Length: 165
Image (cartoon, rainbow, N blue to C red; front, side, top):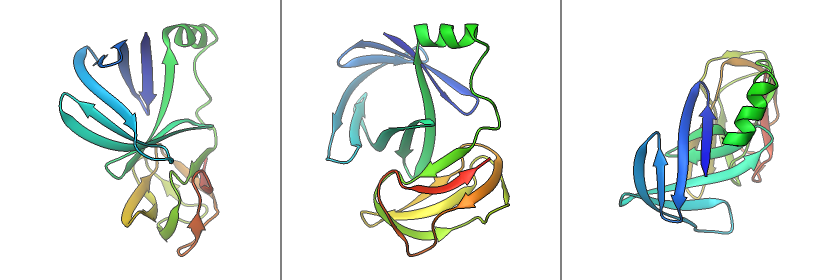
């Protein structure tokens, strides 16, 4: 099965060959992919390199927290992609993006305020979970329309933290 994963303006072509082999942009990988907890934490071995990521589906697409960076991925199979293209493309550019907690934790800091303009990659919130501080970054430029948390707040997985327009 072939898929296209889109994050920002980058498209990644993925083909699942079998349970232990995939290609990513034409490069073949031997993989082992397993869930490691009741939360949505996964372990990936790709060509004998180990990665751990928090992965869950949200309204905006698949949320992936890897090495302290958060990514939003739209994943489509070939049929979905052709259908979307025939209907005139993707979602409007000015859709509201809701940053949600990728895991339960404690808000350490909020780096933005309502009305503030931001750029893609700007750190919005620092969330401490499992004794690690995670920088949650903006997946796109925009303006902060609402901040729902403050330092010291406890949050659960998928709790809304702030909104970007």
